Image (cartoon, rainbow, N blue to C red; front, side, top):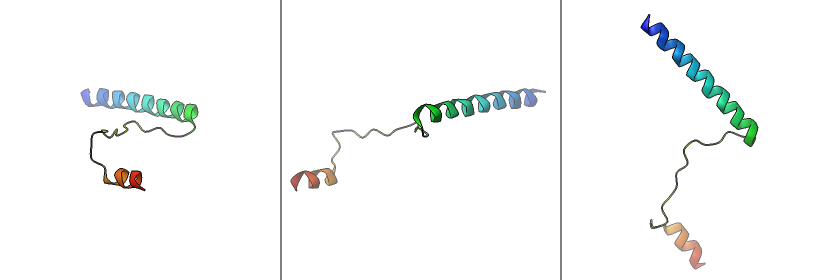
Length: 54
């Protein structure tokens, strides 16, 4: 019986996530990334230094 409850809960969560995702796509017109990597400004970046010199 416990596995059946877990499956029901997982189905509810899955439906909620899908609905949230659909709303997000309607709002922004495209899927939005959930985790965006933000690079530190203090990190050495050779490409940026090369472009600044030219």
